[in-house]
Image 1 (cartoon, rainbow, N blue to C red):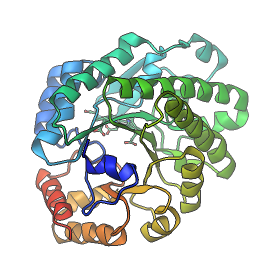
Image 2 (image 1 turned 120 degrees about the vertical axis):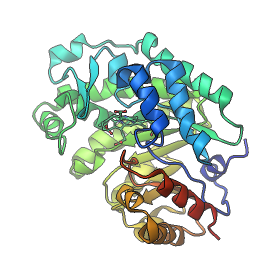
Image 3 (image 1 turned 120 degrees about the horizontal axis):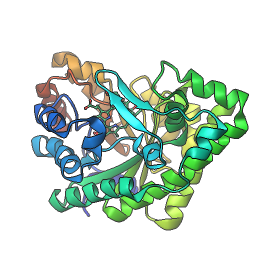
Image 4 (image 1 turned 135 degrees about the vertical axis):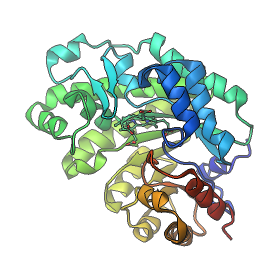
Length: 343
Ligand code: CP3
């Protein structure tokens, strides 16, 4: 497949950086809001293959992105392990909390194919309709981030409940993490088998941990997942997104995992990241989603700075975190045109 993202992940340089956007299927698109309204709930949308495939394809029909990302959620994995999952409108995800040995025992030991199979069916449908030159990205949350929602039953400002449990009961917490390592590796392989071309591992909350906990709960589990995925699929290409960490920790996690690329957030120091990482892996990122909302000359300037800082290295243009619902569509068009026109 001659797709620039695959080429970059395989070690080649390309002239202009390829581009896609985290959360590119979502509420900033009117056609997404239409399908979302018909689906009923967010979880129903994720688990109805025809609808999940439709919203995955919407952004690549509208914009010339180099990748589609399968429409699903990182919390589908705990859901497939028997944890109840629902969304509170206007708030976010809710899970039946898993913060005790009893709750862990009540979980399934194997993924429910009745749930994961729907993701694979959506991937099959997308792959059948996606142009050949567009790659399809499969994904999972990394165990630390997924566990942090499971322990609290919801998102919190700094995932304090999970950090506390890891501190007060490391044995139980590591059992939760181990269960997620097993399930995540299998779900990533399942997505590749269904037709995903590459994978991204989202560790949104990596940045709230101290050095030792980062090593124990982010680096080790992620490295084990990559090892298992590659033992099943030796050519698997994997992008890591450990959000909010230092450049030194980026080096640590890339070295331990053997990631093909690291996605950096909008607060990362681009020049330091380039100096430390560009010879080892590709770099993805890192436009601030708030500047994408602003648009105009500020957006042009920010895009140009990113292009200049990463000129000559293996770079995939992306945001530093997901696009926000209030983003004007014309700003997305403007960003893509500027990246595509890059010299
Ligand atoms: O990127 C894509 O387009 C693919 C789909 C995708 C979604 N969530 C769809 C979604 C992906 C890759 C995710 C990952 C995800 N989900 C993460 C990691 C990345 C990140 O953004 O930090 C996390 C932490 C979650 C859990 C989650 N799902 C939260 C905290 C929320 C609420 C926040 C919000 O934006 O509303 C969701 C909901 C969610 N996941 C939406 C979408 C499009 C919005 C749902 C809606 O339509 O109301």
